[in-house]
Image (cartoon, rainbow, N blue to C red):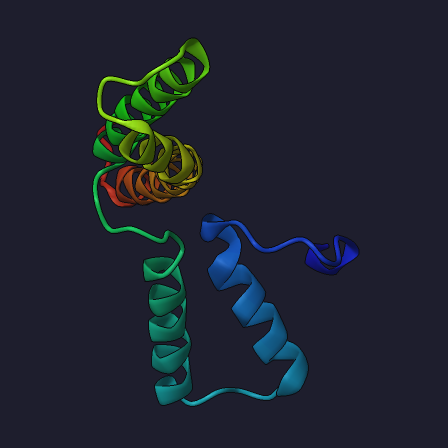
Length: 130
């Protein structure tokens, strides 16, 4: 089932399934315990690198919003005439702030997804009382 979708990267929650499916195709015989441990550590390493910046997602998102607002304000100030901070500083804030804010939004989305997957995994592994 997992091989029907080719070209799409695996979701963080499906990373273990994909690694196990590839290992089962390569060696359908019984695997030693050391191989299973190494595949789990490979999955953990992949999940650790699923996001570019290791900060909580609300901090990334808040920083992105502040930077985007200041960049747009600087852009309006450049278009409106003489900027209060000078042309070079205002242009630098605009030129650097907009791409960095887009990157921070992307990082916040990836980090938020990873945090959600981790919370879901913890919830599913908790013993439940009926």
